[in-house]
Picture 1 (cartoon, rainbow, N blue to C red):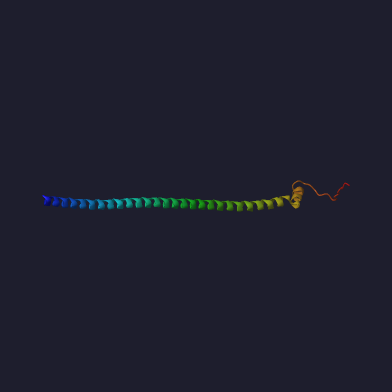
Picture 2: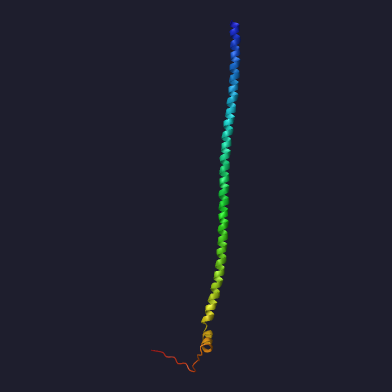
Length: 123
């Protein structure tokens, strides 16, 4: 009977060791799975952050390019307006010239120049 108990005891110990080994193997697998899940979630978060930053920089560079294009258009328009302004100043100077006014007065309006000019000065 003692021999039988010893055999049963040894069998139980063997089963206990196997269960312990299975539990330790299982717990290692669970730990590895937990580590893999944690690493996977961190990688996903990092990927999302990198994609968001890339999108931000692409959007920012697009806005900068659009602003540069608009600024270039405004510079061209400013150059054209300055050229037209200087042309109009020349035209005004031409229209104000005394020779032109005299030729219009004599030719179109029939006016004549007097022979003598008198100037009066008050003192």
